[in-house]
Length: 205
Ligand code: AP5
Ligand code: MG
Image (cartoon, rainbow, N blue to C red; front, top):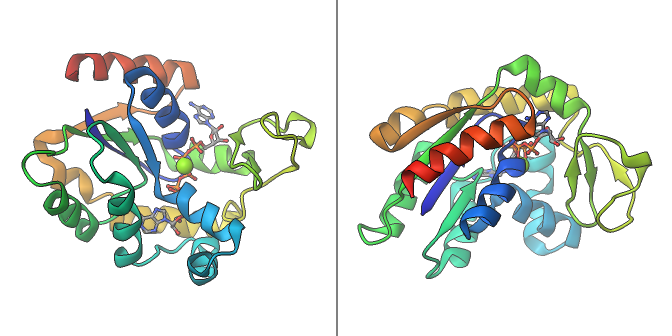
C-alpha cells in the first residue's frame, strides 16, 4: 500500500502511523519528524527551517518535496505522515510517483479543534529521540531516559496558527484526492481509532 495520512495538528497522525506501518509493513515518512531531527542536529537545513517550524508556518514546498523524494527512492509500500500539506505538494507527489507507484489511498483523520487543543497542551515530547506521548512519565522519556517537555510548537498561540494553516492549506486536499479519500473518525481512545483504521485498511489491502 502507498498511503498519505493527513489531518489537523494533534489529530493522532504520528500515533496511528506507527501502528499502521508496523501492522502492514510500510515505510513511515514524517516530514515533521525529519525537520525536527535536522533542527536538533543543528544542520544547515535545520538552522534554515527552525524558526519557521517553531512559528507554526509551513516550510517551503521545494525543501519538503526534496526531503521526501530523496527518501522514497524505490520504496514500494509507504505511509507519508504530514505530507503533502498543500495542493502544490500533492500535485508534485503524484507527478513524482507516476502511474506505476500511484497512491492507493489518502486517509483523513478527523478531530475537532477543541480536542486538538486539549491533546497538544498535554503532549509530552523528547527532543533527544522524538518520543511523543500524552502523559508526563515523571518528566523522563520512557524510550531513551532523556528529559520530556512540551514540543516547541505546542504553545497555545502557535497551535492556533497551525490550525489556521491546516484549514487554509491542507484541508483542500480532501477534494483533491476525491475517490482516493477515506475519512476516519479520530476521536475516542488511541485503541478505538486504531480499530477503525485497521478495519478500513484491511478492506483496502
Ligand atoms: P508535524 O510534525 O507534521 O505536525 P502536525 O501536523 O501539526 O501534527 P502533530 O505531529 O502535532 O500531531 P499528530 O497528528 O502527529 O498527532 P500525535 O500522534 O503526535 O509538522 C510540524 C511542522 O513541521 C509544521 O508546522 C511545519 O512547520 C513543518 N512541516 C511538516 N511537514 C511539512 C510539509 N509537508 N510542508 C511544509 N511544512 C511542513 O498526537 C498528538 C498528541 O495526542 C500526543 O500527545 C498523543 O499521545 C495524543 N494522542 C494521540 N491519539 C490520541 C487519542 N486517540 N486520544 C487522546 N490522545 C491522543
Ligand atoms: Mg506528528
